[in-house]
Length: 384
Image (cartoon, rainbow, N blue to C red):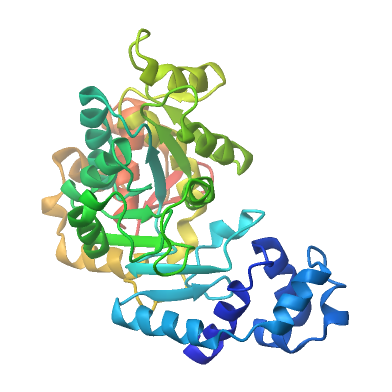
């Protein structure tokens, strides 16, 4: 999408009276923001969620200077502005009732990423910080992208863990993309932009406000297959994210803590309500493997993003650069057992002697790195 087209999206977004749902309804009705801006007040008020006041504000819009400043800043800071009609826009976000019509992206966002959110208290304990970094590092090592909010405490630990595991991580901000909050995270911000993505729905120079964070949280949950809550009080915003995830049909995980710790009462509440207890990374992987399988066709089109390395190309590069000899011994063993004709998992278990859970973890790692693929009926085959 060109700057000429994006400017109309920005203009409509800058109309204060138009919310995300109204924006969607208008674009669906008229076909494009440009057509919306050209419509009459009589036409506009017929659209659901568009009031007479909103229609008047649309017709009065004239702050094109702000629009052009926004485009100039995007170029200056190497930020991509993508719209909900862009193929680079994460499809999973479209399932949110009030999905953002515009995203600002710095770094490399990949719609094919397998995302897990790792979130929790800003006042993290030493135990919580250590465990968060370990879980995130191990998930990143399995090819999972860690999503969090770059807040103090657990969020920052989640990003650091993914980075230390040479994995990808995505930070969703509650501010403009040029506003680093908290300010002490400037170094972390730059590392994430180099090894992942920073995203926000808020315009440049927008300072973080209290009501921004629930909005940010719905994007964190919307991007992710599952949500891991490490530490949370009973009134923690992380519980809001978890509940949003439940509404969106996501897997919810919680890490237990001390029964005497107020910082774990929120996670214990989630566990009582049915969240899966997490003791190690395998507890997460075994729940999301089925969802990962549903995404197996994601590389068929080999679509590239303008500001991203696609998962397809990334996996292809890995397969060329990483020989089978660099795999762990147990992975090499399973590869030798598998053939070009599909094998049922029961047969692989019998031939390998591995326990079911251990074998599933090995197969998941091989699949994420492009060595094998899974077929219906729990059958596995070498990927050609």
